[in-house]
Image (cartoon, rainbow over all chains, first blue to last red):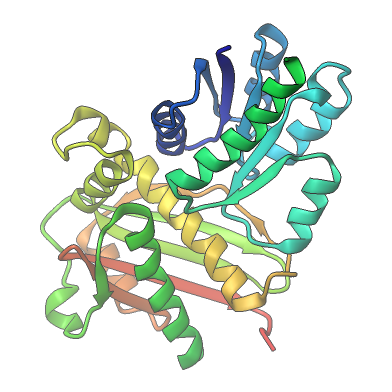
Amino acid sequence: MAFNILVVDDSQTVRAVITKTIQLAGVAVGEVFHAAHGGEALEILHQHWIDLVFSDINMPVMNGLEMVEHMLEDGLLKTVPVIIVSTEGSQTRIDQLKAKGVSAYIRKPFTPEQIRGVIDHILEGKHEAGA
Amino acid sequence: MKPEHKELVSELFCQIFEQTAFMFGDPADEPEEQLAAPEAELVKAQMDFDGPISGHVELAAPLALCTALSANIQGLDEDDPEAEAQALDAIKEMLNIFCGQALTALAGEEAVFHLSIPELQTINAAAWDALRAGEETLGFLIDDHPVLLQASWNGSLE
């Protein structure tokens, strides 16, 4: 089973690095979609089946927290796991995000192992659920 | 900036370059010579932050450093067109990462900050020299490239 992944970050460099890491992780990746902010991400989520979202918080137009809130209002999108990848280190903010159902939080700068570990953990759960 | 904050900021700045891009640096110990405006295209990234303390951070560097940064982050050769294409984005992201890490180090893990989106502009030698002369400006050599960092804030970190 191949998984579709959405990477949301206003930095094209970061999107490229996350994408490359995902592809090198040995995960069965179907398609990797990119969005520069939460608004673009929501459009993609409504048009394509997405299994996992990596998202920054601080972005123009619509930030990551706003995007997550919009996803929670949608019966289908609220089930899509979201991993936040951000520079913010506030435990208060991390706790707020997890209370909103964010699956994991990775702080920048991240290592490829962190990305791989989170993917393995979350997609393993999805694979088992679908079995 | 208090001396202990300067030390923390300097250490963290070099650490971020190392962790993010395997680029090694140190504070410039001969600033007059090492931090003179290079004869090269120069850029400055800047952003604001707001929270328990509020302030502004600027990072100036030659474009060549930005291209090297972009290449290293993405695992590309420096002459790869994609490295050059993302050079300006890479330096803005570096400032973003540094700012997030520095604010946690300075204010603690419970503090919540709002960070602006980094902006970038090209600067000339005169602007570089003015930034270098700033009281709160720290100078570094990162992979032998001069880099200037200025961070200032209102409020107390007590």
